[in-house]
Image (cartoon, rainbow, N blue to C red):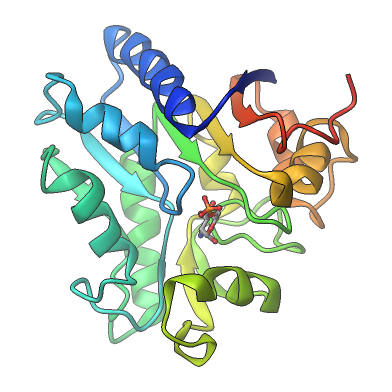
Length: 235
Ligand code: GLP
């Protein structure tokens, strides 16, 4: 695992964009993308660049169950606003939050992920160590699935909604196995609230109780983080 300490998110976005350009030069065609505030500066770098993504494919980590694509809180809407409308990809896949049959949607998404393994997967991390929406306790063998969100995740994400009752209680998420299938992984983490999750990810026990810790088993992971998020990592 490589750790790159940055001053702020803007620098983190720039560092990650340079890493992405290396991967593109090596022939990367599929990006695994994430929502949340942590990757926003990275998307800004992509949008501001003259790099052409029209032959690239993207697969996103997760989506809330029950939110339409045009709901401003849906992850499809987030991705459209921050990236896809300004930098179109050939194809951009996310789970469909309003699929009538959730089990069929899970299967459809797993087929998509099998067909489009990510050359580079972008991750944020939850304060409880979740990656994607794989909450503590999720099997390391999991494929895409429907998740009951942890109360701490609902609380953390309530800031984006008018009231906590509006936060969906379930989500579709890539499984841990899908995430580890990526050739390379970049994880962003900013702020003291992420310090425990990052310490567990970098030098804690590898345990399903802290999903990020599974990244210790992957051989190409870069963590881009600020001083606060790295404050509990042992040197
Ligand atoms: C959500 C997303 C995760 C994301 C996490 C952290 O729960 N499902 O994919 O990593 O939030 O978000 P932020 O980057 O805003 O701290």
